[in-house]
Length: 251
View: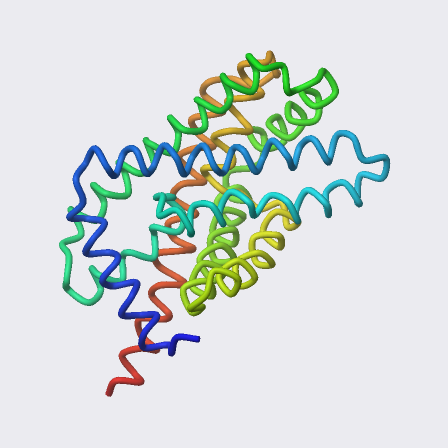
């Protein structure tokens, strides 16, 4: 297991690397991450839709959903929510804020492309039955009609959970350790029903494409509010708190 200092050094160096990466490579990695999250979401909704007990279905779905973020961690893809940790390199003055935001914006846009690709592929493949569409449509309606304040707070909480889990994965030195470390926090995030921008990209686009009673304006408002909330939860709260702990330990 890595020490806290080693974890912080890893996150800082990763932040520098991400901002210096070739833009084409960053876009491809971002698209793959959006696809991986959407693939996990497909399994989640299938379990929710076809498990007789809704509570059991959500529990089983939460156990399979982490497949996406495990793939991202092990294959080196770029996910907006976990990449919020890269702001540590700005706090430590290794990277300028403008370069970090350019990287995060690029990754976020690429994540959306990945989610749309899986939406189109899964729709074309006929994976989603009418009942599954009904389940995801109800979820999308709830997400787009949620009060903005609640939506924002939910997104903040979501990325507190996700980034904590990713930092736990960074502490592990083996593949098995990384998987176990991240699995349960991501399952908690799914069970909590909090707002994750990249997962929402798939949920909302999938529902919209299949005729759900949601509007483009509602989708865009959700995207903006949730992305900002996720940034606050990951970049400001989790990374900020750990930065000050690191400073205190180094003093």
